[in-house]
Each structure stands twice: as C-alpha cells, then as structure tokens.
Length: 516
Ligand code: KIV
Ligand code: ZN
Image 1 (tube, rainbow, N blue to C red):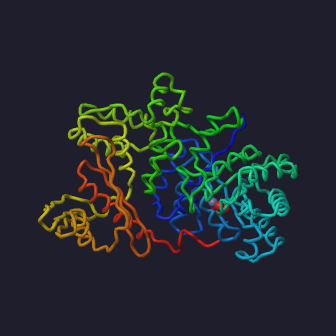
Image 2 (cartoon, rainbow, N blue to C red):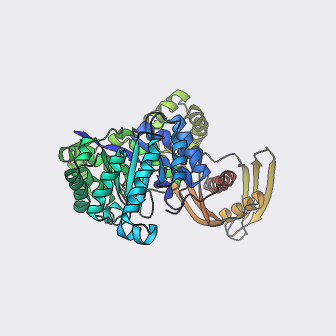
Image 3 (cartoon, rainbow, N blue to C red):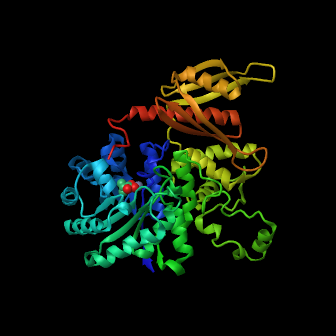
C-alpha cells in the first residue's frame, strides 16, 4: 500500500469560510487536535495577510512537533519573508508558494505572460529555499491551465527546488477522470518527478460537489498528497473533506491500494471541535460525521443490522470514534473516571480544560439522572470556547407571560471583577436579555442568526444555543450551553461579544483575505 500524505488546510483555506474566523488560542487548540489525528502537514495560515495570522502560525510552529507546519505565501518577497519567519521555530517547516497559471487568471488577474510567471515562480522558490528545504509550489487554477504550460511550469518549479507540486482545482471545475488524468500525464511526461522524488498533490474545491471524487481520482493518477479540511469547510462550497478522503481510502483500500497515517478514531472529536470553534454546523446527512451517517431508519435495514452489522454498514462507527450513546457516568462518578472518558472520546485537551468541564459535569449530574457521551462532548466543546474573560454572566431574572411585556434583569462581571446590572424589556424573554446585555456592554450588534438544539433526548437535556451577531460588517458567532435555555441564550450572546472584543484587541493591519 502506498502512503498518501494528508495536508490539512482547515486553519487556512478552511478559515476562509465566511463567518469562520478563529482566534489564536482556538487555532492552537485545533492544531493540537490535528497533530493527534496524525495529519502529516498542517497549513497553519497565510502569515502576510495579518499580524494575527503571522502570530498564529508562529505559535503553532513553536509548539507542534508531530506534524510539518506550513505557511502560505504568494510569489512576492514580502510574503516569503513573513512565511519564512513564521515557520522558523518549527521542527519541520514548509513554505507553500502559489501563483496563478491559467489563461483566464494570467490575462485578467495577473496581467502577466507565461515567461514572466515562470521566472516569478523560480525566483520565489529559490527565495523560499533560504528559509526551508521543504517548498511546495501551486500553479493556482491548475485544472484550467493549458497542459503544455502546466508541464513547463511544473518542470521549472522542480528544477528550481520545489519538493511538492500541488495542482489546485481552485474553482471546483474539474471532473474526476479529467483531474486524475492531469496527474498521470505529468508523471509520464516529466521523468524529473520520479527522479527527484517529488510529491504531486491534489487540492480540490467543492463547487460542483466533486471535491472528494476528484481528489481520489488524483490519487489513482499518482498524487501522494491530498489537501483537505475537517468537515470540508473552506472558500465558497468548501474543500475536499478530510474524513471522507481518509475513510474512502481506508474502507476501499482494496481498490485504491493506498492508505494514510491518520488515526481514524480521532476523526469524530476533531470534527466536533472544528464545528464548535468555527460555528459551522455539520449537516445531518453529511458522510462519515453527520448525525444520520450511522442511523438506520428502515425496518428492513434495522433487522439486517441486528442480524449482521455489515449487511448495511460498510464502516464500524467505532472506527471514527463515534460515541456509543451509552450511559457512561452519573453524579457519583469521580474526576478520574470523567477524565478517562474524555480521553476515550478522543479529545486532546489540557488538564485545566478537563477540570473546568468536570465542575460543570458535577452540576449537570445533579440535575440530570443520566449523563451520556454527547453531554460530555458538549461540556468539553464548551471549554474550547476560549473567548471568555471580558464579560461573565453572574445571573439573570426574567419576568414574562402571555399578558406581560417580557422584562429581563441581567448582572454581569467585567474583567476587573466589577459587577454591572441593568434591566430591559424586549419582544420576548431572549430579546429582553439580549437588550439588557447590549446596554451593559455598550457594544451595538445585530443578531443575524439564533439556533437552539437539545444535545440529548429527554426533558432534562442540555440545551445548546448558537448565535451569529453582526458588527461593522463582520459576522461573529458564539455558543452557550445549559439545561436552562435562557441561560444558554445569554451565554451564547456573551461568548460572541467576548470574541468580538478579543478580536478587536488583536485587530490587524490587513484583512485576512488579501487579494491575490
Ligand atoms: O484553491 C487554491 O488554489 C488555493 C491555493 C492557494 C493553493 O487555495
Ligand atoms: Zn483552495
């Protein structure tokens, strides 16, 4: 079996999903989880795009030793210098250079000719090699680039010293057979690829829903690196989903004759963490990690499963670390059992996070007779919301009813420990709480999305609220968890406001989406 390297770009292309902006501690948290998942290369960001991105890549490079840490750069000296300095502390660091090569990008975006682009690529690769021997080059929009030019620039990039050539389907235009053919063709036409042991890499977007199929076809054509994101998040319709690539190669190894180094049992907790920190929910019927992915509704199917699981299940849910939904702990369970369960669920979290989740678990176990894996996950995910600290909810009181104007009194504590209290009316109890919080924090925001769900079944279930707020054209989200849905609503709103404050504090010189 050949090994296919997994290059995860959740923290770079994934973070380019609208509304998915992450703080530096959140990026570090995800990077730790990706390392424990066994990702070969983590693309940690685009260092020139902002001071915040530079710092995040540097912090990840300083701490994570089990994966190669990569920074993205355009073929510009300033980009290369920023990326080179950001990855400098890494045990193993990579610079990923890109420059558009398709006719449409050459003529309308870059306004540069082929020769000029080749020279730019060569000069940039040489400059990047001053910082690291591991340099990846991407001819952006490769799938729409004329084959002859693609051969020419690939050859030139390898001669200049690039060790990985990534061939992006930037706009999700490729078809599986066509995309796979590009790889097979280049390998046949350019002996330098084999002679220098260069990795060809696939990078697919999902505009036509073919990102995963295209990536797998690239593997059949000879790609030995796949670029992907957790839950398939990314620009527009997203990138190829890591969990789908990994499980397809694992389940159909007989067909693809290739495998990855991913620890599949960490897939589910990693997916949960990314969903929780980015606020991008996973659709119920999403392959591998959706809520329905292993649910069997039809009677005939249920009967088959009970007789022999493999009649209707091609993967064992245990292999992706899916919780068994078994009753695990109760109010007499101790710290040790709790910590054990968190580890079994696949989380790579700190002792302080487990301790804080344990305190909440005890409160929950007092209210709820049965504590399920899903409850524990929600408590741990809640600890991963790292934006607390500016305003904290002390308590709220609500006066409401069918013939009363809902009125909320809210008490908050600010970072100096000072108690703030105010009251407000609203269209409903949640609205009244939110306007009291706005008065207290003095931050004017618009609520653009509000979602509520029960984490498990039953009337004592934990309620999870997710909100999206808009402030100066920026969308910010927050999440709150409690058996009391009004408290969960207040916590979600405060989490978003705290996130907004912490982002404003590290506000950047440039937008994260630098024009290319
Ligand atoms: O989709 C794309 O072309 C990219 C490049 C920066 C590799 O993300
Ligand atoms: Zn991309």
